[in-house]
Image (cartoon, rainbow, N blue to C red):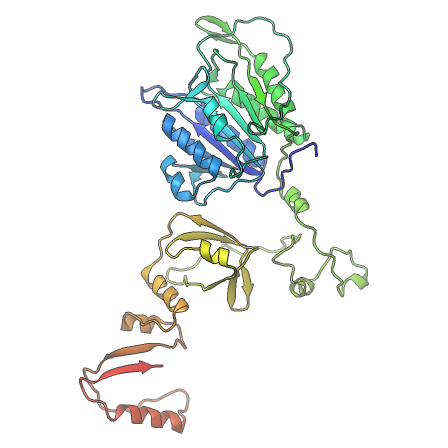
Length: 454
């Protein structure tokens, strides 16, 4: 009861709004370093990391509204959303879905109470807060939402004076405003410092402290309070003299928030345990968890349970040659799933079930829309024949390229009749086949219209 439950996979979304190139020609050097550092840390904590870069004030506002309501992929295309992968930020392929927590990092110039878009217009931080307040429709209601704001809050600087130890504000439970956590790079009216090469004091400290504290299963408030202390201990030198920086925490979390690093072993432990089967091996002194392939195949748990095993042999990478791709007929179970899948759209399918010659999509499968996939015309026609086998083919070429044993219907006009020729066949024809071939062809004339079914 004392902590937020984080069981979703992934843990949630981490959105990074980073503005580096402004309309007046100003460049925020070091913001890319901050964005990458944040992406590495939060992806290691189980978050799916997305980035919107160089947005105007209105674009930032609309993007935040989209993520607060979890819009579809087409609405996000305006914001050029990128996704963090092992190779860096790449194009977004799959519509994002919220998990049990949400992280938002805003990296930009700022002024008192706001952050700037690349057009120099200010987006009030209070508006960001209102956008993510709890509502009956919000997918994030009662879930923790953490906001890290790397932006100046004014033009004043902190003189280099000795400060007493500071502690973060306590939790508050206010229904509509609950479950929000804000940490600002600096207190109101003051500037936030950023190294053009190494990134900002605040974000780099956040990343380092999260790496250490999350390994210890510490609450996020404890970790980020150390960020306050670490940044407050730094001292820079501007033309106006020595300068300090004091981050600020403000939150309404009702419970402790603990983010844990995600490893393969951690994910397996959180999965449902493998069912203990009565197997033929269990009587032979083997450990209860050891199962033969025969037992697994006969148990019906391959699609539903976590299976632990060792890779003992790995083949070379297999690639399909051009032209060998084929259409696959999916059997979709359930009205909701059937309604979700729209003709002409492209999707990513996960956890499909192979049942003999059928591939099935059911409630345990994951279906999410992705950007359009270009499919060769011949595969589209092949798919049409799979769904509607009685539909007419478009050309003789289609018939010739059809798989063996394909049943087709052809309607056309007889333009020429060749003399009967003897042919050698591999298999002996039955008398019935000979009779049918002779009977059907002897009365044909040029100009007749035929419908052939085979």
